[in-house]
Length: 100
Image 1 (cartoon, rainbow, N blue to C red):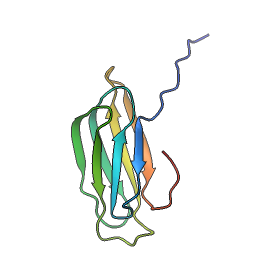
Image 2: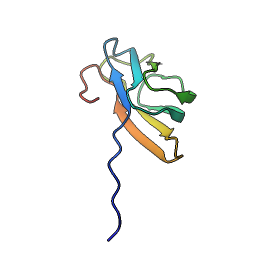
Image 3: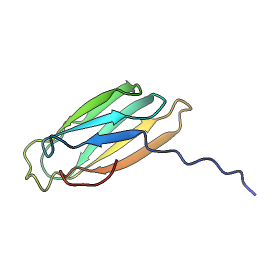
Image 4: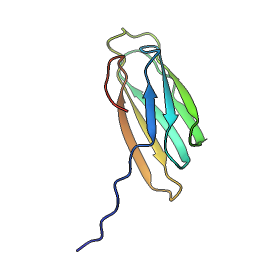
């Protein structure tokens, strides 16, 4: 048998209070994330984002411009944990989307 590892919980919360034009991404985890990048897929424009490190409790602002309020697309987040393992998370950017 192969040893199993504990599941890794996505360390982010997406605050949608100012959606659909602005979102806040908060690192709710217990460890910093490194090499955080954001890629927007969809209508409108979301500036590419690259952050060297996001410490626990810190937040980033994500802005989306030029799209209809109900059609802002998704962002794909990519980051590394301190052990250098890489993760991806697809986040829908709509005001009433459920999720963390």
